[in-house]
Image (tube, rainbow, N blue to C red; front, side, top):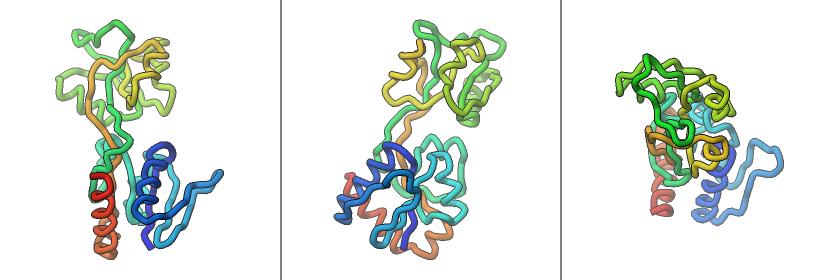
Length: 203
């Protein structure tokens, strides 16, 4: 049995489609269920940011998580494969029609990704005051809480609807397959076999 942690939302749906293609299984998470078992696999349905914790803690053997989450938290896991789904960008967002004022003594940046944000602006030798938020990040510049935001962007529609625009791209992201180091030792052949099948399917 291999336990797989999947993030809630579109990435989980896309990942399950890949598994259906490989194993011919017809399954989906129903209602509010958080655990689903099918054949030799058990799937856990959890928040994207929590995937590495489940994998590191041994609750899941492998997981599917965005590269942005891996870069933000730097978990002690093995990264096995870029699944090439859930593609997005981590961007700096500013008021539409404006640019980030790098001449300011410091910038106030609202984000749920403080580590990525801090490293990006440090690489530009720009002082920042990071305001950590967990949601509705686009609101921060609109009410003067922040000069800009750093957030995940798929189409840019949410920023546009709130009078913002992506100004700079920090990194490209997509969903990656990760594994627990302990599970990789105990279930190496099963995990590598699954990785190879996934790689062949998405190629």
